[in-house]
Amino acid sequence: MPKRLKGFEDELRALGREIARRREELGLTQAELATRCKLSTDGVVRIEVARSAPTAISLFGLARALGCSPADFFQKQPKRAPAVQRVAALLEDQEDEVVDTAAACVRAIVKLTAARRPPPLPELPEGQSRRQT
Image (tube, rainbow, N blue to C red):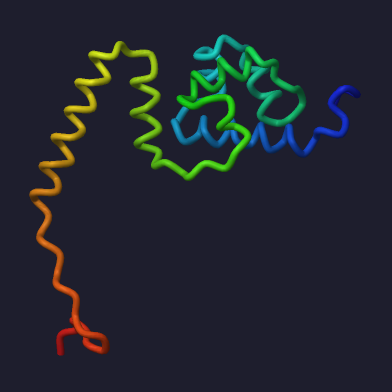
C-alpha cells in the first residue's frame, strides 16, 4: 500500500468490500463493472482489495454503474434483494419513458400476484394453535 494511504487501511478495506458486495449483488464480474465505469479491470480489483484509493471521479463512475450514490458506499444500507438490484441496474441508463413503463409493468405483476394469494388466516386467541390433530 502506498505511504499516502497509510492510516486509512480499514476505511479502504470497508469501501472495497462494499463495492464488491454491490457488484456481486448485481451479478457483475469485475471486468463488467470496469467496462461500465470506464476503469480497467485491474483498477476495480485494486479498489476492491484496498490496494489503491479511488479518485472522486472513479467513485462517481462506480456508483453510477452500481445504481447507487457515492455516499452509499460509506453508510450501512438495508440490503435489497439481488433481483431488485439487477432491475435497478438494467434501468439505470434508460430514458424516463422506459423506466415509467417498467414500473407500470412491475405494479401490474405485483397486483396480479397479490390477487392470487389466499387471504390471510384470522388471528387466533392466545394459547390456541392451528395444529391439526
